[in-house]
Length: 344
Ligand SMILES: Cc1ncc(COP(=O)(O)O)c(C=O)c1O
Image (cartoon, rainbow, N blue to C red; front, top):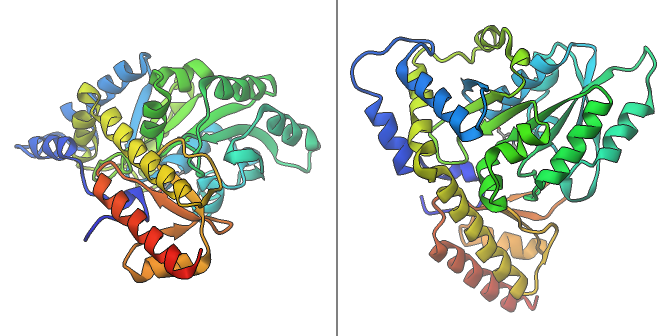
């Protein structure tokens, strides 16, 4: 299948992750995470984050987010999130399910980024016994709208969360794209900025499968292994979930691939703007969100292009780690030709 913009999940496994996976396929290894590969990746993760964090591997982002959130609150608590957050819109109620009922408290704010005042507003909205007590704030980095939180913005939300007695969770399905785009140390946009738990996305970054749950507040990881097992998220052949991370985290491979995906999104974004189209959010990571007349979208799909519409309507064009500049340019040529033929 040729390349598409539908999702960064459409891309295959990057070569470095694949060779680590193949290397891990030699001989026997202890099961359920008691193997050298898993230990080595967890150690590598601690050096990437420059701190003594606890690391777990699960199969997907929904499990990572919902199990992480469940470990951060009780069933009578609530989780403050942006209304466009994946946890609220695309996880089929899994955060509520795995926390036995903790409620999501969605709010809206510009460019899909929560602000300190959003936290205060929701915390102070009600504090009576009839309302689920706010306990966690969740931020998505990069956001569902392809925007980024700068380290100061995360720190500001975290400080406000702390002030109200809340913990901070980060959905980092596209954490690599954020680190590459911001040019910061991973620690600067996580624990140094007050994040307690990070769901570090592996799949979109180029792994075959799997995400890591990284606990900077290690008290929160107590019993997390049992939570994973109960949820069907404890891989028996854990080395296959873990090993590809080694290929990815060595020599900044993950950041190189993510930087490439971001650069392709910039190329696409600049090209679309030059053709007179309007972005609904600035292109800051690997996604481009652009307003397109419906007829143009349909004509592009008619030429075989695949992409989704974002909640609210704009076209969502995602660039994966392997996106080729030629693919971006072919898409732009098609947009130009079709728009001209429609008089747009
Ligand atoms: C912001 C965000 N979080 C998490 C996920 C992970 O979801 P999944 O359960 O499909 O791995 C995605 C995938 O689209 C996402 O965009």
